Length: 242
Ligand SMILES: [Fe+2]
Ligand SMILES: [Fe+2]
Image 1: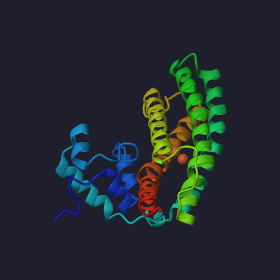
Image 2 (image 1 turned 30 degrees about the vertical axis):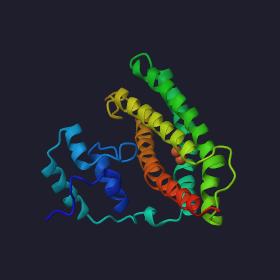
Image 3 (image 1 turned 120 degrees about the vertical axis):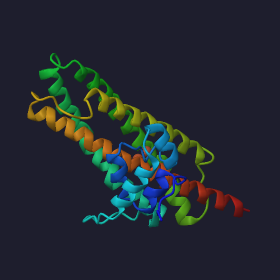
């Protein structure tokens, strides 16, 4: 008897066992922005055999991972906020400028033989700027309200009314970042360097691939864990408010 059923959503399965994100990653199944889809819907969309997908998922679950998996669903909202900043925002603040400099260099040297590199650079530049602003909004506006709401069990005064408003905006921006990464993936044939690529070219594609994976985990933590829990808490506090 299978432990998996087709009516379960991808996000639910990753929440239950975060290491499953790797399985979905390898299968090219979106578990962050598209995490609300059920396995049935994923199979229909990607034309996968449902019985086979369940079998593969079960086999993957038997693999023992060396790395400790993060128990994000057991973290408090405050802990989750710290975890997101340390594991994802700080990583992006280091990687975005480093990759932008490397990609500019690759465009200068190889842009003529591979014109798609020019498009990649302009997509990446916009992605980096938007993500920088996005993270600032999360760290300076939304996250402090969420942490404070949990710590004092009261809804703090804020300029945006219910937190559903900034959350909707953050999710919209996550979709934009996801689209940019998907375009970068397409323009680089799945982050695969051409045979003649130099080491910098290879390192850039490798770095972009890492950013894609890190962003999937990042957005999963926000869209599927932090935001729903914060909305639930806000609702709970509103219900008991005098
Ligand atoms: Fe974030
Ligand atoms: Fe975000």
